[in-house]
Length: 212
Image (tube, rainbow, N blue to C red; front, top):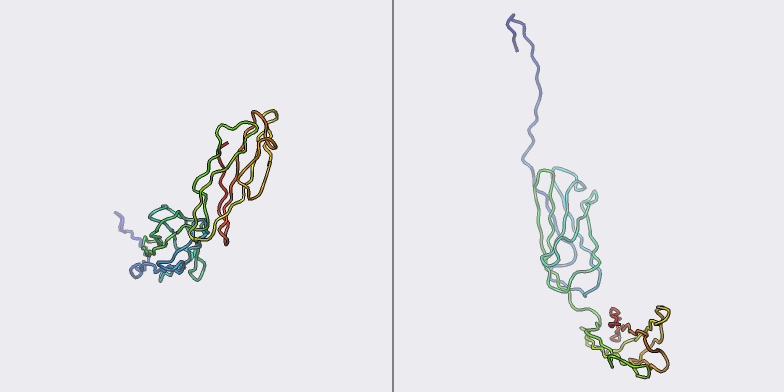
């Protein structure tokens, strides 16, 4: 740089131009492509990623399902391993996608198919009869069940009575009986409902409550 009097000054800077950005590489380690699981079971997604330009721990990792949407994100450790544990997925066949992105928006994507099947026994429906019930009636829980295992189905019935005068909700009877004797367990104005827990000989299904 020179001014009008002829005085000059100079400076310099060194700019190093690096090689082109390398996209990260990635793999889904589990679950295996095409594998299956039971509805309600937890599922751990795991994978690995590497990048020629930066540490794996600086990579952004996200998971998604074409059925359930965004599943969550993971943080790779120094060797590139990462995982994400899900409480469950909906019953369906899922395309599970992994997206790994570096600081320069380089991307690696992988996808697998995972099917969630009906797991243990489930209560498909439950009603109480007679409805309405009188004090001396015997209430019956009419429940229908299904199970992917095909095993013999049974259930535990936990009967509850909400006292009309106090509003207290108390367990009146518990066991294998789908019947509750009104002459013994409830009075006029009380409200009654039942919790039904199915069992297929190998696993216990989720408890379902009837309407009050």
